[in-house]
Length: 54
Image (cartoon, rainbow, N blue to C red; front, top):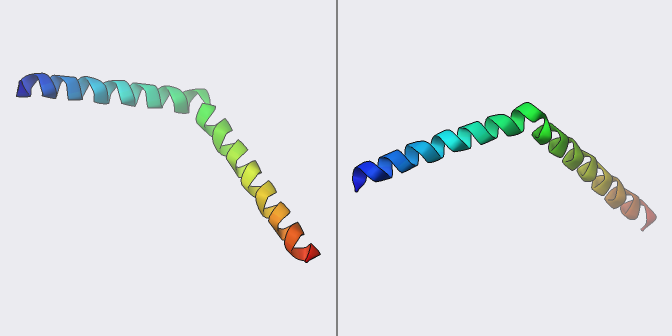
C-alpha cells in the first residue's frame, strides 16, 4: 500500500508542476495579477477620496 501511495504522490506532483508551468507560460497568471493590482489601486483611491470628503 505504501508503494501505491508513493506512486500516486509522484504523479500528483508531476501533474501539478505541469499545470503550474502551463498557467505561468500562457500569461494567465500575469493577467490576473495585473487585474488584482488595478483593483487594489482603485480601492485605495476610493478610500482616500472618502477620507478627504470627511
